Length: 267
Image 1 (cartoon, rainbow, N blue to C red):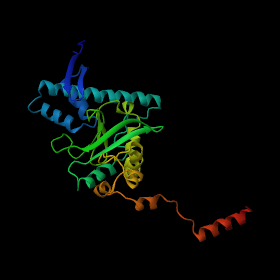
Image 2: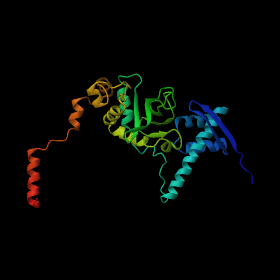
Image 3: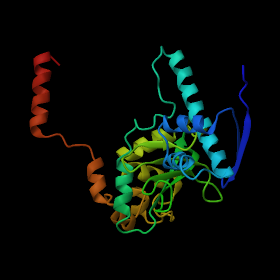
Image 4: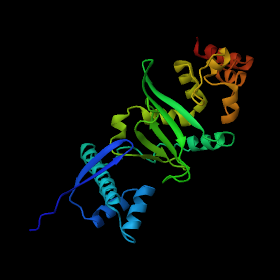
């Protein structure tokens, strides 16, 4: 019986080095990638493998992507065994419905050349992690997608994943959920109420989540962003939002109906 040869593939990128052991042939690696929601980069590697061939660095990336895809499948199988053979995707990509976020960036892009949004995961009033969202450029592997990066001192930390133009969440690697707890919930809340979430964070951090400037004006601090960003991103400003947040005033008819119900029940 022939034993498969194990090879080590390594790459060095902007986020550090990465090495994996692989017993796959190039064809097997490509098949695994193609059968598991490949990224544009993965598709490009597989296509080039069958035409002009791959460089040593590209071969390394081919096997790294295949390794990540295979690990995801194994994790799904482990989860399936634990919950009765119902496979639950590890990263829930495609199920959260983030369509509103690319739509918001398209609105911001009408007036801003490089729109960015700064968000944070907060627990108990403390900031656990900060993130920056921006549009991937035309020369990137996924132009028009929204990249989600952990914000660090050197501006960009780990690239956690991207939101495709149709609102599908595509994680950058296996285990993003574990390394960044609360991130997907934050993105889901933000997609449902961008003005509300950024207002909450703006008041906590003291800076606008859209332009990053310090909030000094009382009205801007209350809203979490200023009038210029509100106009650029199509957000409510000032009294418009406060009117929405005020509780609905009970009408005379409501009071009469409530009293009539109480009379019938003996209250």
